[in-house]
Amino acid sequence: MLRRQAWAALAVMAALAACKNSAPAPAAAVPDSCSSNTECGDSTHFRCDTQLRRCVCISDSACGGSTPFCNAFTGQCVTEIAGCKSNADCGGGQYCDTALRTCKPITGFCKACVSDAECGTGSSCLAHPDFPEAGKFCVPACDANSQCASPLACRGGSCFPSTACGNSNACAPDSLKPCTADADCGDAAQLCDQTLKACVQRDHTCGAGFSCDPQSKVCRSACSADSDCVAIEHTNGYQCRANACFRLDVCTQDSDCNNGQACLSNPDGSKSCAVACVPGATPSSCPLGQGCDATTSPQHPRCAAGCTQNSDCPLNTICAGGVCAPSGGSCAQYCQTTQVCKIGANCPSTSDCCIDANFGVLCPPGGSCGTCPTNGSGCTLSQCASNCFPVDVVHASSQANCPANTYYNSKSGTCQVEVHLTACSQDSDCPYKGFKCISKATFPSCGSGSVCFPEEPAAQTACGLGHP
Image (cartoon, rainbow, N blue to C red; front, side):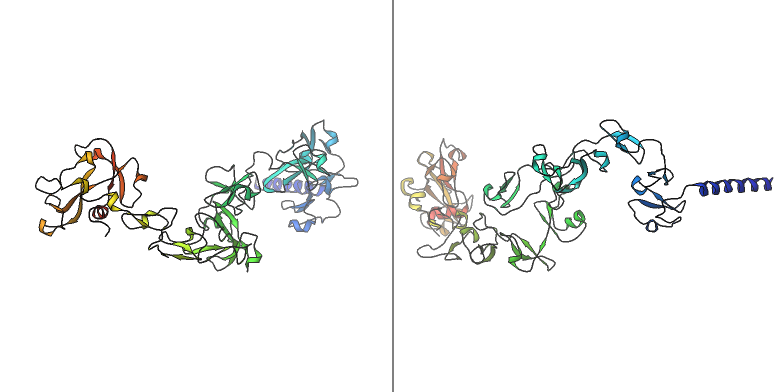
């Protein structure tokens, strides 16, 4: 029984060997046996079948002479073969898939493809020159723009649309060109982002969490820091700007960079081209105490010590003579906003100088209010109709410790005085620091209307006793 099984096995092996030996030989240009593709020569025509250890054809172009067709199943060049041999064997609107010897519909314009053959005569399977990573699509051949249907353009011998074909993730990236207005972008599709002071696309086509990669011009994961770009671009040398990874332009000096850029140091010690600052930008793109110097090198402005405008300086100084100055001339304190002035002062935009309030007008103590009305424990009563209200001027432990003409309120532990406040309808009517327009209805038993009330304790002191 075992002997009979052994003979059967030998018979099967002999039959397999006979099948292999009876297979037609490959084209004479390749060896009869192989162990790798390199032994078969031209990889576009042949490959090594590691099971048969023979070089086999992969397309009709590998064959010729009396055996012009490649049998896709045996890998041998043969004289005749079933199925289509060329596009001529197929009907209109079809092409011959020679790998399967089957007629298939021609792939239409701007549809995804793998080979030129499926695009039909006169068209090729190509990637868009501006969006190489968006894939390949069928596009017609041309010699000039006049041969392309509008709005296609003839580029490199083929008609391409302005953007990538199909439902691809192709996109137009932000140029990030320095700007102060939309006209600086020179592109109707981009506008000037006033926060970035750089040109960005009006319409972003990438979805949430994605941004347009400026190198490949396809949508990729958005970045929030330079370190994110290593994972997104799979290498170093990129900077995250406006949520997209930009390849750093290595440089050694400003002249290596485009206009509007400067050669700046990176955290890793290398240098690359980037926007250092934008002249005239508000707020300033430079640190406080520095200005955007566009005079030393107009094409490559940089931040430099000094200033060119008030916004280059801290808020309690202004730019005077190229430096940030706290005072000058008759101005004891320069300012850019009222908040840096002392209590009871104002910073009018016309002077850049803190102006003290005239407390004799803003809230004169006594005066028309007369003696502070009391109930025996300080100024506890208001004269609403006359806009007279009590304010605290200092803390004390008894009347003996209060300034002259003030009254001790034992309940609050403060010395008080009655002041006459000016009427108002909004906060801008009370421009001095520490004062706010408050409704008289806030006070007990008071009617309608509002007054400029010294809201802060220091403002009440200044209002009752004059400027500190």
